[in-house]
Image (cartoon, rainbow, N blue to C red; front, side, top):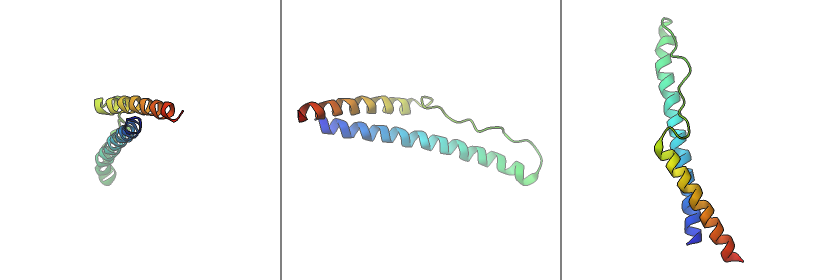
Length: 84
């Protein structure tokens, strides 16, 4: 049970990181797609800095991160106490 919790925790932390990175990629892609026509035509104004999402802006990123850290610590504790 300890190893399964440990690896599940690592998987959830990785999934949270992938989801967060994907959100940031989409934000930069959206910024680039909005600013490219301005550069092409030479008129208008830039949309400013891209609005980057925070870690806990998406509910699932925070939830998966907290669950992953909890399962990681629980699994690590089980593995260490079983080894002794």
